Amino acid sequence: MPVTVEDLDRAIRAAFPVSHLDIEDQSSGCGSSYAILLVSEVFEGKNTLARHRLINQALKEEISQLHAFSQKSFTPAQYATHMAKSG
Image 1 (cartoon, rainbow, N blue to C red):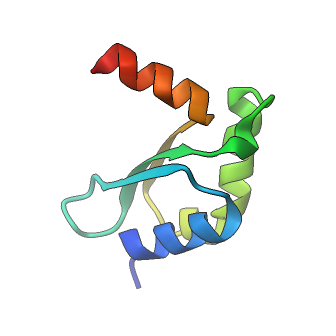
Image 2: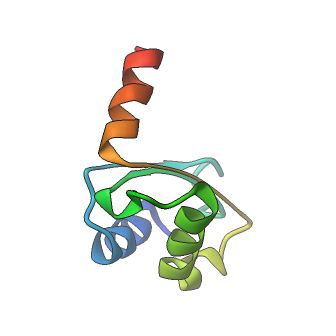
């Protein structure tokens, strides 16, 4: 059974305190490729690699069923700066 946006949302919210979450199905609906943007205070003091490892570990089961998975992770302060620059 393919992974759904709801499956990813549920797994992420169970593993992390979420300030903001975007999940994009990049596979035209077949559930094989997703991109996420996750904002959480749990990322404070962690570099990008450490953040990605946390996410990959939390979503191990879901990611194993996907063809492609990309992620962006921010602290709340970093996300506010990111939005100010892109807005």
